[in-house]
Length: 204
Ligand SMILES: O=P(O)(O)OP(=O)(O)OP(=O)(O)OC[C@H]1O[C@@H](n2cnc3c(O)ncnc32)[C@H](O)[C@@H]1O
Ligand SMILES: [Mg+2]
Image 1 (tube, rainbow, N blue to C red):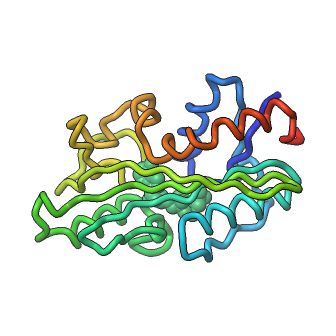
Image 2 (tube, rainbow, N blue to C red; image 1 turned 90 degrees about the horizontal axis):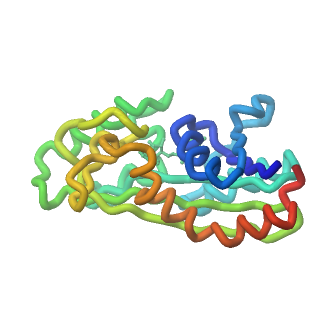
């Protein structure tokens, strides 16, 4: 069985990875399947550092190939915030609705043309005994003044894609998985991942 372990506890991410991998005959498992593993501290100062921390910590604990995803929303008018703090922007415990409300209130007086933003995703692939690979992907958009759509997770309902004319939360998962920051990053890991899976280096 071909299997990829993703070092995430976020069910929204897990669903996206599953959608992308299952048509290729690859099963995914996440930290939700390994409840006894210790919490990974996201102490890095960049998305890349945090993705590596997640992937390497879990890879070491399981002695398996593991992918880490660290991602977030970069808003130009907020100097790049919430950035690496996207998950807990409105404080603990992390809550998507509260995060969105905080962003919208900070942007209250910012006009449409200055509401540009991008999603960023860093992926790290840790393989026992090998150097960790990292790649990144982005997706450009604008922050709306109110939520639209019910799909996706996180900041998707306020992230508007001007070329498509819909928010990320108004896309089907197939549509999101073609254009998202996560999909764009994953495309760059494809060749690497395929050859590791072919060689059976995932130690399943
Ligand atoms: O660390 P793990 O367990 O993977 O789960 P997490 O939710 O804490 O993940 P991050 O630390 O990478 O924080 C990412 C946050 O950025 C936001 N985010 C990332 N990708 C997103 C997407 O595709 N759509 C909407 N929001 C996204 C969302 O708020 C996430 O909680
Ligand atoms: Mg996190």
